[in-house]
Image (cartoon, rainbow, N blue to C red; front, side, top):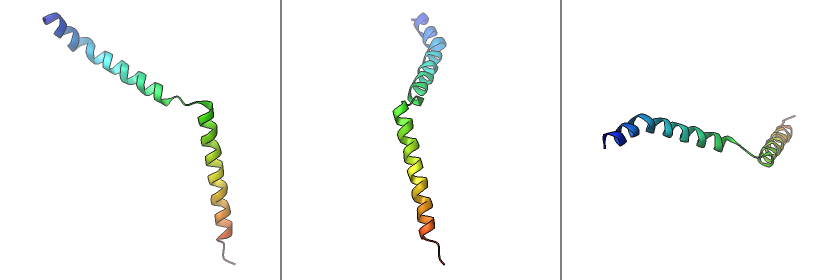
Length: 59
């Protein structure tokens, strides 16, 4: 029983840390298609905002 408790206390935190880092790295990855869609959306938003500013100009 003492061996299991020692193992859980000494190795357990490292296993948990490794799992957390692995999950974080896994969720950080994005596909090329997702990146392209995000870039296209940002470009369209910038164009829309610049057009809106041009229309709102008072002469």
